[in-house]
Image (cartoon, rainbow, N blue to C red):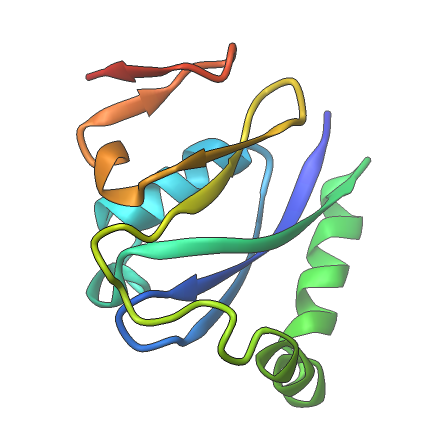
Length: 123
């Protein structure tokens, strides 16, 4: 099974969030639906980058590494200004089950599900 470490950025306050998961699409959707307590107040979120691992322990180890103050500052500098505050037409990237990237307006996903085939379906 694959595991992912991912980096999100808030459209609301440009904050960076780092996490890990086995299902990247589902986890990003949960962040944007407000189902994750620590990120609920800062949605919508934009997926900046992710890295795939073969084991959960590797993903967690990399997540902890990225959460070090120095690494988080490097990420902030790397993405400084790349994602502006939420403006109606801004788009977000979501990884489809096939590994490709799909561009979707995050507001569109609040009441929809990203299917494994990469298509968006109404909930």
